[in-house]
Length: 145
Image 1: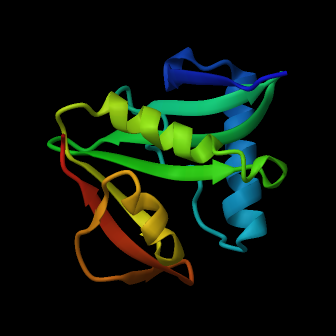
Image 2 (image 1 turned 90 degrees about the vertical axis):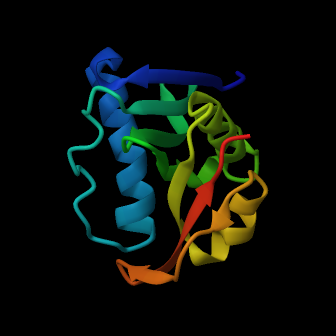
């Protein structure tokens, strides 16, 4: 089965989709990367937040969210299931997320080792690096085309 790209606001998600999206993010960020942090930060439920994911028969293979920060948008919570990595799913999600932000600058906090990966999409370093949950990060920004 070919995974299907899905896009929805929080209010449009089924309880099963919410669970699957949160489960993947917790599996990747909290368990795999060993970062105990408040995964449920309140931003998922904001009316302007977009959730994007690849669904494979009810399994979430990869996900991102796009936040409305007023004059900018922010892409975050970029996560791919361990068994689905290397298939380009996260790249396709980032491209779709950027498309949702047409005409508006997009920001993100990238894990430092992924800076070059995000530069593929037009993101550029926008400030000094920082450590979040024990992982080096860099702020990045993409200006509208």
